[in-house]
Image (cartoon, rainbow, N blue to C red; front, top):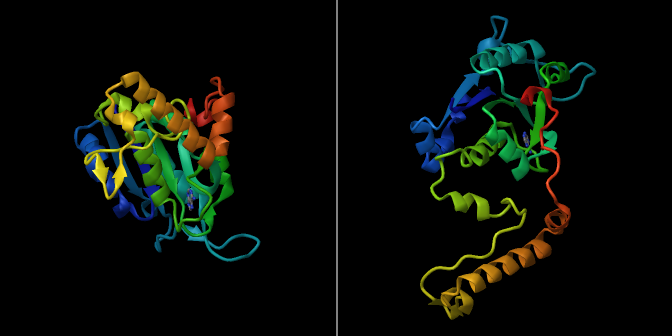
Length: 246
Ligand code: ADE
């Protein structure tokens, strides 16, 4: 069965967007994964097709109604039930490569994109949603976050990327280190030479240099990743124990 993404959004025209191009787009056309964007508004209950309402307790903005969101989730899950329901929100757990790997290893996801102030808390709880943030900044909706999450997952699916090792060796790969710097021709450009060792043809020396560069840049730029790298010896699954991920 192919990895399936169902997006619940008020702007289905935003999909597949950039995921229809390049490697993800080719994978989509080849059936290596599939994407269905659903308009939440189709599940509105009244003749005005309203999906949101003012917040109880007052305050600015509008909140997506639980009954409308729940109906949309029900339809998406009916197609392929054994998938996590993800709500993209800056309140969520930060997306990282471990979580991406876990999601990519499953059978897909249902992705709820919020707009306005948010989604009624009751449907988040009732559906056991996994709340995910792509970073500590606020987007005007979950759609770009959903595209980001999907891009990160889809490139890990079998057959989507060309060389298997290009996924394993890059930044945030299995080792949790940032990537070493890359160089190509010309060997000298604008008075700047390529590091000698890369022209030496000594594979072991090149591997050692790259490893040292990876460690150096990780220590300098991301002491948090470096600390995790040093202490990491496996660990619990990123979404293990989450009911919807079973
Ligand atoms: N919706 C708005 N901002 C977001 C963020 N940073 N991550 C995920 N979803 C969002």
